[in-house]
Image (cartoon, rainbow, N blue to C red; front, side, top):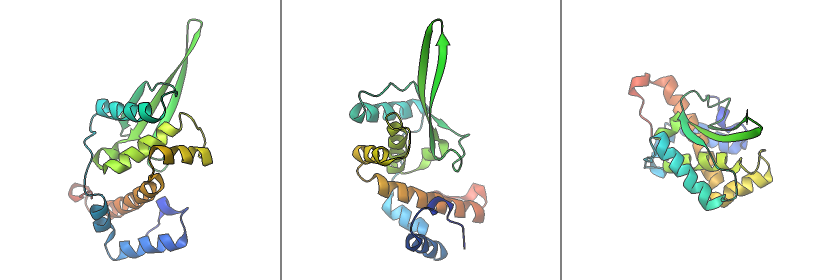
Length: 175
């Protein structure tokens, strides 16, 4: 059956359930029923505003974010689903650092919960560099159902991959 690359770290029982739903062609219906809406954050400007509002609500004392944008060049497997960077430059006798968050452009057409989960994940990196216990506690603080949304997002990516392999790109419908 299909490789579950996005779910490799999950329990074999969960993987078996996902494989079964894929085999029965029920995964798309599950996602549609669970996440029927799409968000309206379509432009980079709207994404910046969405991100800064979340940051202001939960991480007021963290460094400001200079740029937030959708990035069509992000590779979902290599760079995960978003990317945070700090660009340091010497200007005169000062060292300046600009914080950027880039979100994979595939998130333009996803449920609001998935976009929020990715933004929360990238914001948490402002305080915690590593994916450690403190990092996930911070994610959970900002988005109480963080772990469920992450799991469902991985199911969505798995479903999306199967659709890309079985349909011509022009006829693919996202959930």
